[in-house]
Length: 102
Image (cartoon, rainbow, N blue to C red; front, side, top):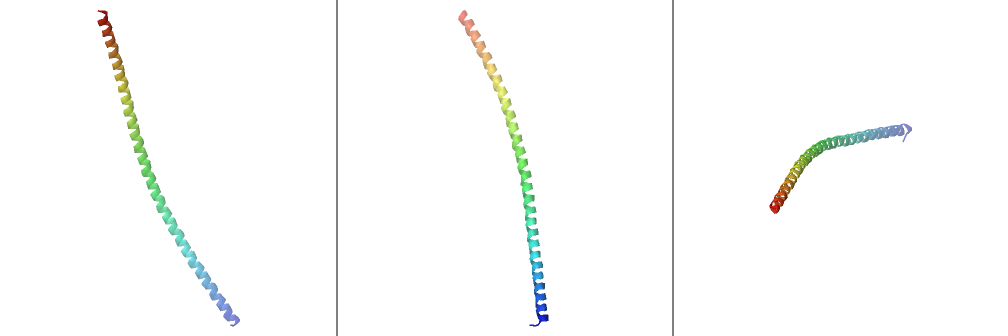
């Protein structure tokens, strides 16, 4: 092989190497873009799920507040009932004393 043939062969090999590098670079860029697109899709899904979870927690919190208010109402009613029972017991005791005294 002549010097000129060797130079041509080396030049062709460098061109092939640069073409291979460019192709690999393109493939890598496409893969990176694909991963980025998947990440964006997953991020959108996570954001959507987060919003749904926040809404559910708010609904549950509102329900607990409602139940808590009901318990407070029932507690007040029970206290009133106990007060009424105590009054009735005192009245019965007074009646019993008066009956026993007569």
